[in-house]
Image (cartoon, rainbow, N blue to C red; front, side, top):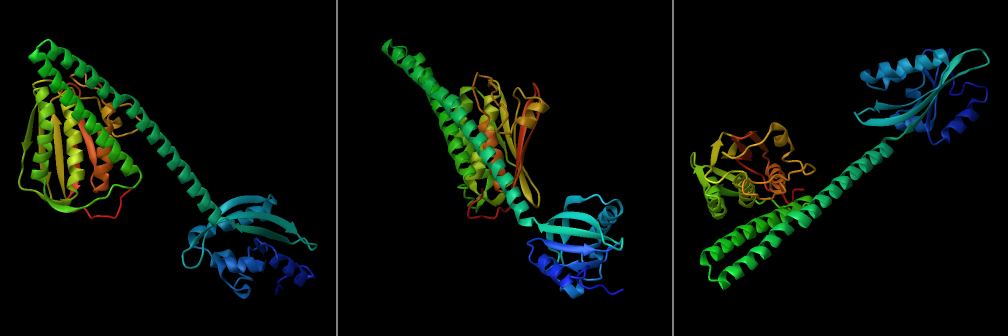
Length: 377
């Protein structure tokens, strides 16, 4: 039996009403064949009315979606219970749309059952909702980062300056009493404390730049051994105060294309962390191993080590890193968090292995070639 666009005698009038609806509408018979559609539905599926009437959606949608659509249609036609749900439909050309559908059954005067479906395209609103959730998550992350920064500034950065003030008073008293050995000791401690405070301040500034997308990766051809040696020279003074030896086990003349400042910052932080948790008389070994794709840098110490649970928390900004060093040094663990961020920005990764009481190994990788970007955030 050939069906017109309208089911009732006033089909043209019904069609006009449907065409003026904002939502897409189609009507199916008991065999799931479409007997009526409005202009909005034709526009949605990008097909003319003549190419839709008399067909099922099986000819329009992908095979993976076909079974689900037909199953719901038959269920509504069978039990008459309205079905409201969200569905994904893949249009011609592969574009996916998220639809809110409302399917209901009606029976005409001849007792024939029909399925009426009102379709609303909610793709854009869903994308907006997802973007909103992402923005909320990002704002939460920014808030947590700000709180962490304020905490470090209030406690960890304030503490060394209090120590410097106290040591300065002690040095003044020692000089006044002509106690040269004590004044020399105080000055050495002031120097060490100052270097630690500068390192922490540098890390805070670098982290702030990183979070605001102002860390610029400038790649250059560099000799990794030279970079390691230059960085260790800056750490020898602090290591000397604890009688800790720094050893660079140079594998071979390794060349990489990467950002020397970033690599120096990572090594400096890892060595500083190792010094903090290595007892007097200990040693720290830095080694490098390369393959065809990357270089693996290891900073190993024979310090106090840590548990596997502590290892897993090291690079998380929201974890408590308030461990005390072997010489009662206080730390925030912020250098490790920054190192992870920088390692990832040059295309590498960072991790730690440790045994409590037997020392730790911190490793990070450097791709042989890091592509420069305008700004990495």
